[in-house]
Image 1 (tube, rainbow, N blue to C red):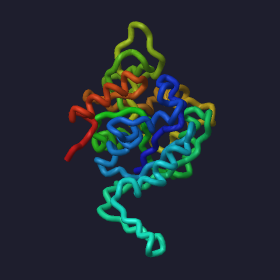
Image 2: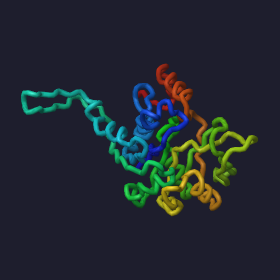
Image 3: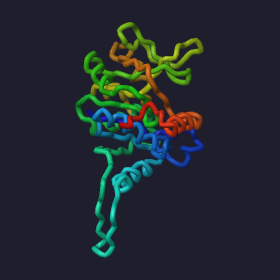
Image 4: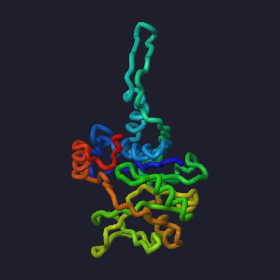
Length: 258
């Protein structure tokens, strides 16, 4: 199953960093947030990634173009035709497809643009700025078991995002903007989608979190995987500092240090 990561937005809420680089390339512990997200999936054996690029996409492409070199010990022998020998490669076993999904394309439009790379099979989708200790294996099994079109990971958090209404069978009955008296269950990303999702994506102007998810919830085709563990997005500098502090303390819940 391929993993699609949305990494093309402007990151305006953390503009002090994102004016220099794409938001998923902002570093925590010396590594981009995008790398942290990919490591979460890789831990569970998901190593085939499709990155939806947009704003300052060249920085993401250049990072992966040099990734193998930067993660390895190398010898450059200029006396032998500029020969390079790689020692002790510790790069991950990743296959990474980087796709230009447009500068101003909305999230749903970005997903629609990578359809040909996904093929006619279920795939995972998440954001390039959020980390969690969610069990990806159990998430995949949950999605396979209920047979619906889409699963999103539901997490408890403060009232900054759209709200999910979930019934007793974990079916999402509404996906809407928050109200002052709402609870705190929101879409945490880490989604699993059947290929039928592309039927709900009209074009570049489609916001994935609006019409497509709202339509799926009305049709009974949107399910919630409830995650009660750690989840944190990097939406502001304060969020970044929180994540950096967790990493520095050795207590980052999203990290497997085995």
